[in-house]
Length: 138
Image 1: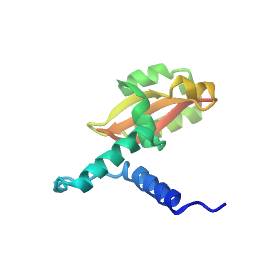
Image 2: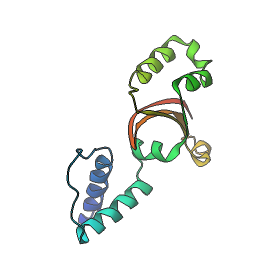
Image 3: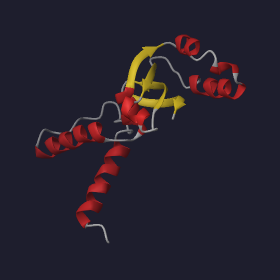
Image 4: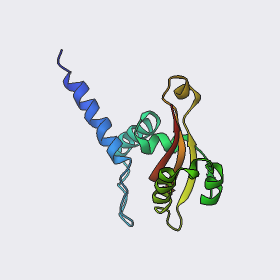
């Protein structure tokens, strides 16, 4: 069975939106003028943010508490004893810059019940996901 043109177009729109959610607008760029196209774009973006399953959107929705690097390291103290874990963590933390925030995230209970759970830490620059470090999954 061949996919319909509407299905292909819808998939292309979702892919474009998913890629677009990770793209930053250049500073100082004038915004679009109000109009029908802007309203359509706003609706598409709202639906995208609610339904998107890219890392950027999922981790942004799942983040629950902001903490310092020191607090996070205290929480994962046992894991830090493993040299590979420690090396990966150091690479992750090296991405922190002034103004960035470290957040803990955990997927909802439903995902754990379906053996698709994930939790860890994520670095954000405002609303943009810079990097994530998964500490648990099933």
